[in-house]
Amino acid sequence: MEGDDLDDEALPSMTTISRHNFGDDSEKPDLCISVIENMREDYGLFVWPCSIVLAEYVWQQSQRFSGTSVVELGAGTSLPGLVAAKVGADVTLTDDSSRLEVLDNMRKVCDLNKLNCNVLGLTWGVWDSSIFNLQPEVILGADVLYDSNAFDDLFATVTFLLQKSPGSVFMTSYHNRSGHHLIEFLMVKWGLKCVKLLDGFSFLPPCKASVLSGNIQLAEITLI
Image (cartoon, rainbow, N blue to C red; front, side):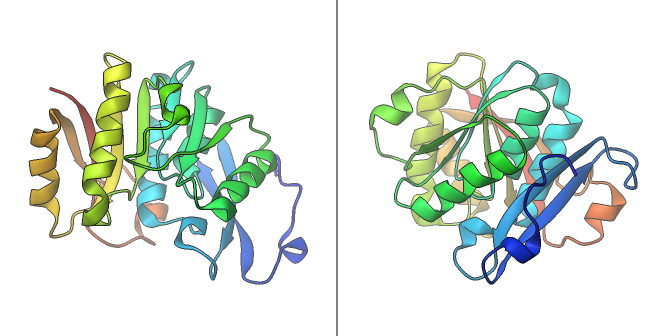
């Protein structure tokens, strides 16, 4: 498998490599991404359903990503960003600056897939030098809307990045939980609007939809 220089036996306990295929033929996929996961250590080291949904969307929208500057927020195992890089985007993968193990795993996953992505510690709502150098045309975020206490910091960060790149878009997949009205309120507060809203299962291949559960939505969000 392309870039698959590690095997499960060489990994620490509770760590495994998952493989994610993209394309119409599951037996002969057009693209395969390998991800190092750890089931014990950190929720940022596991491929969650929202990440699978957003990665599939990136793959199906691949023409929008070729030659595009992309930043993934709260990337964790980084599956959507890795797909974007494979289809020709210039990708920066970010996660909280304090989560050193997650950031280190992101670098290993890039090496595993032979990708030259920039890996950056970026804490939502913190205005340090790292965020000022970013000018993404597309911002990705899979399951970043899970903790309502962090929503304001997330939307502040997204708004700042969208303002730096006129015409840019935030693509996010999320579980439609009880905080949906809070999300709508904060979009208005930060001058954002939803320009596309999809059922996350509406575009998933049956082989992926059959193993996922939940009410997952995908939204494209821009400045008003």
